[in-house]
Image 1 (cartoon, helix red, strand yellow):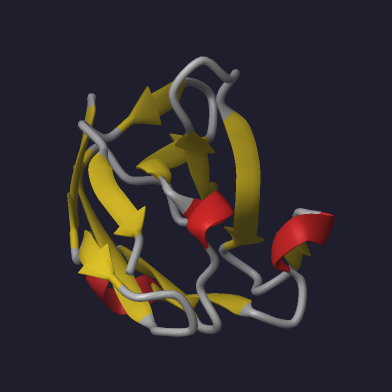
Image 2 (tube, helix red, strand yellow):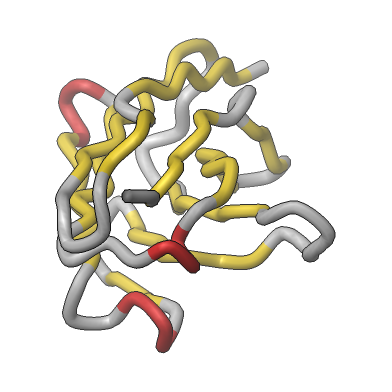
Length: 114
């Protein structure tokens, strides 16, 4: 089993920044992929960004150039730095761990509004 605990969500004005963190614990494999997904009201959950344990990253087109995903393998923690936030970034953000199985965090709300 893998447990994921997210933090860092909140309310921010358009153009502002937030940093999300996700700490993984439990049966962590050295080789895994961690990522961030989001789900806005009435929409399907979508990939925001992912990163492998080797540092390979993948981003949704809508966040390229604004969001940066990173990780600290020694801490089993992944981060999402979100800059130039827009109202359409408003969603619940979920951390995901993938190796042999997929695990999800509980989600953290990000609201971008003036």
